[in-house]
Length: 236
Image 1 (cartoon, helix red, strand yellow):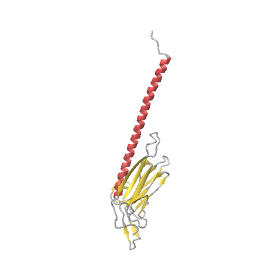
Image 2 (tube, one colour):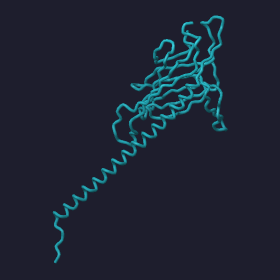
Image 3 (cartoon, one colour):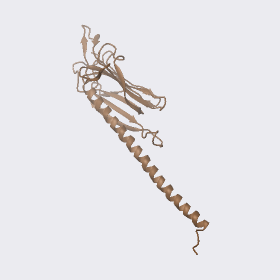
């Protein structure tokens, strides 16, 4: 006559089974978590590359024009280059407005999005998302270049959930980096030679990956502005 399993054998078997299931679940969870983190980072890098390519194209096509008067200290500016240093808490939230020949898109009601190749004012700025505590990056394009570069045109989002964007400008005359730039100021009738762009993206998507986000991933690039006005020096 065969004997059945004892209570100790059953408990031991259940303990071994539970251990194996726990190990499999832990391995699956770690794999799933790693996959989500890598997928999030890949999408973030793709977005960052697209932003850098866009900024490179438009910065390299930026230009500055003016209508001189008899008095050199009084000029009618036709285009602008304005860099504003700003923060949202500890996050850099700079804004830059400039005129470019790179073109872009003209949005016409009822006609969708049509290509636009003429000069325009472009504006890159951020807004704080109260739900996530992160910044959303927007672009504004205004095909009507007038004496008010800060308003007008159409705004649209570029990327959501960044930890900061910072612009610095290299003055080819003074040989120094500056946090701000404004061609509206007297004597500042020229463009920076270089623009340094720093974009900070979160380490992880906290909605999908439960890990602490420390600092963020810092991506940086330096863009040369080919347009130079060598004959127009500061304070002339």
